[in-house]
Image 1: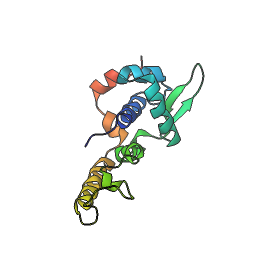
Image 2: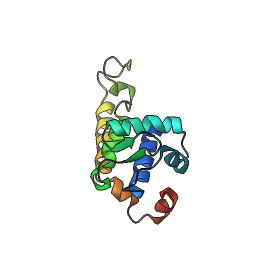
Image 3: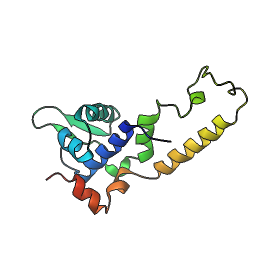
Image 4: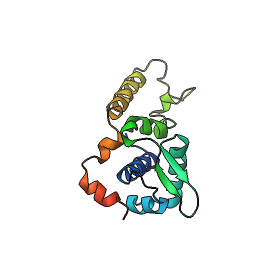
Length: 144
């Protein structure tokens, strides 16, 4: 299993905002700290704003900040937001996936159970948990 780059960037962006709580941070600062393309990051920021994780402000003194407290944002919910459109296997896409085993294979159920366990594990964690007492991360992400 491998998460998409967008999910990874979403988590980095939320952690960046959490480290800099109470501030409006610039997309350029997030991109630089997270080693990301500003264009790619813009798409992630747009989706995070649509999902009400962050607030964005346009203009010269604009940027982004957490809309909700970091302790209220569950890692599992963020991963679901970004990964839900990517089927884990072709048989989980719905419709006729083209797998000749689809009618009798139990693997789809096993994968679904494993995926749910994965998300349940991530649901126990928050963005605040990712940044709390993490001085190395704070040093990397703190805006001067």
